[in-house]
Amino acid sequence: MAGNGSYDWADQWDYSDSKDVVTENTKKSGGGNTTTKYKQKVGEGLGKTKAVASNGVKKVKQGTSLGFQWIKDKYNKTAHKK
Image (tube, one colour):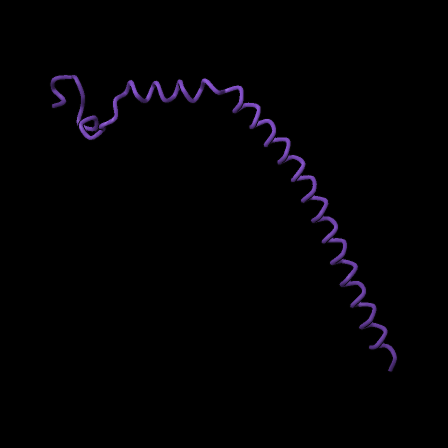
């Protein structure tokens, strides 16, 4: 099979026509403008989401720190009353 040069061993199991693959790729690339526009919008959305998430994490860390400080203060008040 490989001796005739028309296809090799792996190609005998590939039932797709290589011409079909090329036309599918060209069809997909034809709408590149909309794809680019959506990628840009998604990228902007991810940037905003990242900023909001970062701000939220900072608030959680600050709140947790204040909570632990409050617990330490309450413990110290009750521990030193003796």
